[in-house]
Every structure is written in structure tokens, then in C-alpha cells.
Image 1 (cartoon, rainbow, N blue to C red):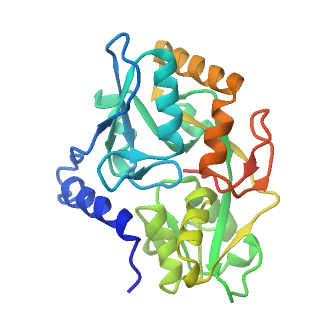
Image 2 (image 1 turned 90 degrees about the vertical axis):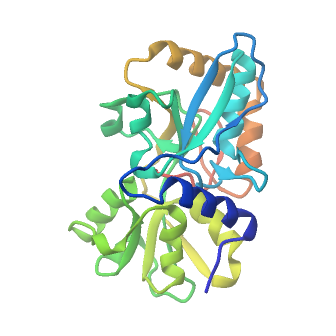
Image 3 (image 1 turned 120 degrees about the horizontal axis):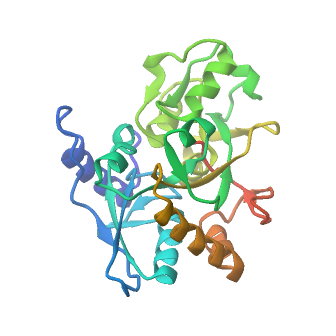
Length: 284
């Protein structure tokens, strides 16, 4: 039976047992971690994250988190003078933490769709994303249109589910829905015809499990969407602070360095005025 790498599995199991053990009370694990940022004002930014969404967010063996989004937020915190605390939540209740006050920001490679903008505010973009397919290496599937009558796994509540409905001209089969990017691509390893999801995590897992012979299919006509951090609708003060930090990072090259650290192998594409390679950033 295929298992996740040991360093990744242990924190995930701990989170699952603590955070998702009871359907009636989806309380997050106390696995939050403060970033080593300057705390001139003593303010703490509470950030809600999906616990495993590499390369944006992933658990450290020693506790806490690392990833693209973590590095960007920590850098903003250093520039703006506050600390950051990260707390994991299941994807299906992630955005609810803004309304409840449990979180000030939601992070994790989130696409700024027009639908989401109706109920929440996004920062300026720090990268962009698109969807990809994952199939077995010897699969006859070559393009997105080839999955019209295939069994395709997808993460529920994501842009991928919407795109799959368009590709198959019907509502996605709920039996093919999963709760995470890992489970989505793992379904292909277990026999599904294909999986659809964000390129960044799919590329990460395909690279981690090369012996499974997963092949990724890119769509040259795929919609490229900006990704950003999410705050509660109307929180203009926090939005301005985050955007100020992002602007400074773009100006001094910090954002480019973080991008290339976490996405070193990408197809070339242009992002927000920066020549970033197009990896798998996701329509999460």
C-alpha cells in the first residue's frame, strides 16, 4: 500500500486525529506556530491554513509549517512589524474562520475567483495558477477533452470541481470527490482514470513518487488565475498592510527569491509583471 513520505505522514496523522476525529466538532489541532518576525507593535496575525498543500503549506517534522505562503507571510510580517501564528483547519471549514474571528487571514495558494471576491477580500496577487490532469504514465488520455467519459478524482469545493463539470458536461460524481490534493492524486495511483487539480501540489507529489509513474497533462488554453491571501470582507486596514508588504517584496526581489525557492521547475509564464515559470500553482 502506498504511503506518504514519513516526514509528511506523522504531522498529517496527528492533525487528522486531533482536528477531524469528530464530525460534530471540527476543532483544529493546537499545532499553530509563531513566525520569527519582528514584533514592534506586539500584534499577532492569526492565519488559517489547510495543513498539507505543498509547496504552499506543509508541516514540519518538528512542528509548525513551511512553504511558499509561509515564507511570504513571514517576510511581510518582518517588514510590517508583527508576528504570525498559523493554525490548521480542514478545507471545508477553512474560510469560516474569518467570520468567526478565529483567523485574520486564510492562506494556501488560493485563487482569487470572482465568486470568492463576492464574500471575501483578496490581497494583490503574488503568483498565478492553473489546473492540470494527473494520469498513469501509460494512459491513453492525452488532453483535457479526453476525460469526458472517464472517472476523474477531484477535491471537493475547489475550482477543479467546477472545471470537471464543464469538461464532462455534467455534475462531477460525488464518489470521485476527495478532501485533499494528496488524496486526489493518490486515487490515480489506486486505479482512477485521472485526477484534476492545481499544478503545484500535483507536481510536488508526482516528483515525490516518481516510482508510481504519474504523468501530468497541461492545458495550453487553461485559464490562469491570480492567487493571493484572503481577509474578511471589508477589512481594508489589514488588506492595505498586507499589500504594502507585498509591494515591498516585489520591489526588492524578495518575492522572486521565494518563488524560485519553492517552484524551481516550471514551464515559463508571466506572472503579475514578473517572469515566473509556470508550475503547478493551483485553483484551490
